[in-house]
Image (tube, rainbow, N blue to C red; front, side, top):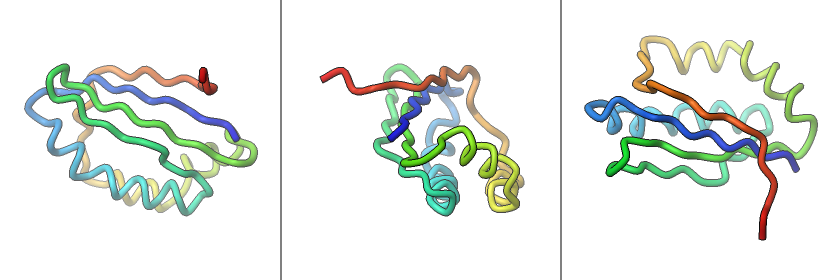
Length: 94
């Protein structure tokens, strides 16, 4: 199982907007075999952190997901409040 950790710095005025929209993209990710493991809104630091896993070839599934019409539809009309992104593959430490 491959896991990607995604941490976003978010426009403080728009964190609620990201939280409300997020389930839409989770649904699309699931259609492509991904599982969203956790998602946290850190209001104090204006961050949104989540992890996503895939049981197979993560990169191949990601490429298919990224070019999908479902992903494009989920992002249609959504102006991202993310100001900075940190994305990396991670492994369990405990």
